[in-house]
Image 1: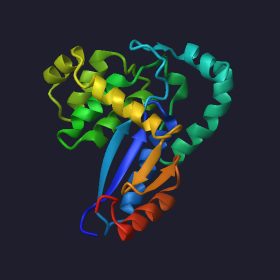
Image 2: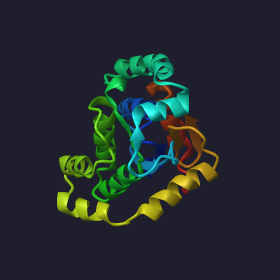
Image 3: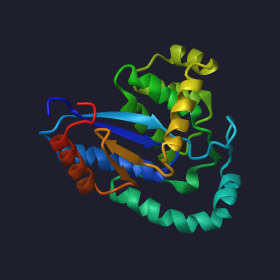
Image 4: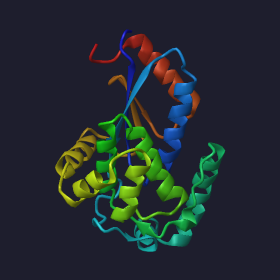
Amino acid sequence: MTQPVRIDVVSDIVCPWCFIGKKRLEQAIALSPDTPVEVHYRPYFLNDWIPREGIARNEYLTTKFGSPDRYKEIAQRVVAAAAAEGLIYNAAGISNQPNTIDAHRLIRWAGGIGKAGAMKQRLMDLYFTEGADLTNQAVLVQAAADIGLDPEDIRAALDSDQDVEAVTQEAESAKEAGIQGVPMFIFGGRFAVSGAQSSEHLAQAIARTAQAGNASE
């Protein structure tokens, strides 16, 4: 094939398995040095019921898992999986469960300068490792500045409704297409891989797509 393998990654910033899956995809790409790839990050709302200002983390854990203590049991496996990939998931450090529309807007805008992946990583590191509040505009503006976006432009854009509808429609389209869990990796528009699979499994999907070609070719 002449075109790079297209990889669409449907995920949400607050999904710990998406945090892990992103790292595993990067490892898979490193395992495929002779195959050019093109990664596109697509929005998904795991918790579209959360208001724009977010809610207290313990309230969220009680609503979704029954209690914060119940989640502690679940989180142990995720924390260990993250650590195995060199990532830090500080579950106890998160105090606010955000609505992620603005974070997804940042990723969209960063894509305009080829830095969607860097923006997504910065936001995930802030949330999972540093326990930052992703509904706090100052946090978002600084995150954007960290990867090279103009902070004043980003502040003005966040104050507006720019791309709110576009991001929302894209996230809703993913659910309408039948995606019920994330991360979801779509290779070449042909092959879908669900969940934070191993880097070896993802590398196999890259190789398979390289042989078959992207669906649009």
